[in-house]
Length: 226
Length: 189
Image (cartoon, rainbow over all chains, first blue to last red; front, side, top):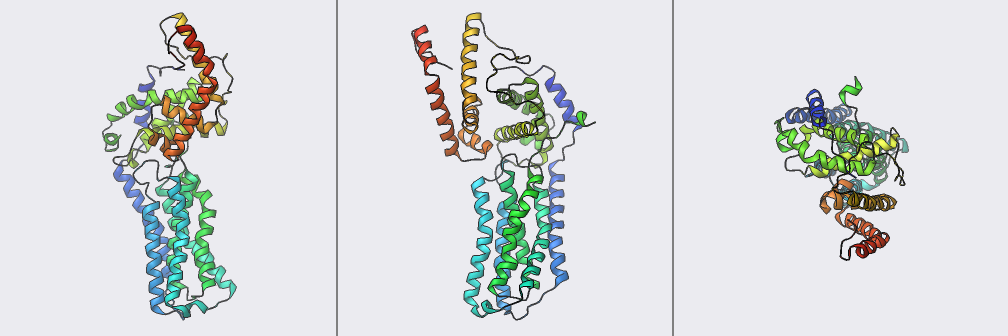
């Protein structure tokens, strides 16, 4: 089965290309930097508004938790947000692995930190505090989530859902990190329900919405739209 | 693509020459609708044009182009804007497609073989058929086909191999007949 393209096809396409805007690399980079700045700005602003509250937590506990979760969030973002060496993004397996590894890594560091400060393990709080921190973490994650989605907008023709899952997990890791500052409760149940569970919930819940943004969509040529 | 992404507008013509015929052949085989295939080639290249600013230095262009084309085609089918082809369309109009061949006998025999292969290919599971077509018909490497399909090299290899084995089994009579007719090793190609 073969058929050559019509002789005037190339000329028509080149004419279409001339009238279709395509931002150059510098513009794309500038726009992406703006998205990232706004996304993280949102989280930072919330963290500033909520303030730093140590409560009964030992200061080294807070520092260790903050630093280790910052490392995890940074590593996740560095790996998951860029496409890697291919225009088709990272492989499905590596994206799934990274998305699953993010909450597991938060949990693992939490375990290690509790081993160093076992007294922090027993702190208790009312169940509604779990819900408040859960909600705060989700809201804090919305900034980075939107930024990551916009950075990868219209870019994934192969596995947008998996990419979205990974981006959402990465964004919510930042919220977990930022929420450590204002939350004075260090009990295991609270950190699990209020600060690690949102990563899982947002990854699963946010994936659908982010998929709609990162998935490559057909757009009608300019003259058909007009 | 690298030159085009860096701002050399004239490079798009070269990109077109490199990709458009291959994309068109692939899309035509997938859609069996010339107008649809042309639309998709146009959409694919326009999409690449829009994304020129995001192109990664050193990235492969061909798998990207095929993946975009495949995604746009699947989305189009899902939206139901165009009629999806049936697997049994031997008698239908080819919408202006041109067969190339020097003699009437060769043309008829070649056409029969091509129709039979296309018919058997269409009966394969989609993942096997697409893997087979990307590798055997579009000359993509295993790694490139794996990227287009968002899977691993070994999975693509396995799918293409299964497709090949199935085709070899079901087209065995064609090969045998060809051998009887010619008295040589000429097979179904």
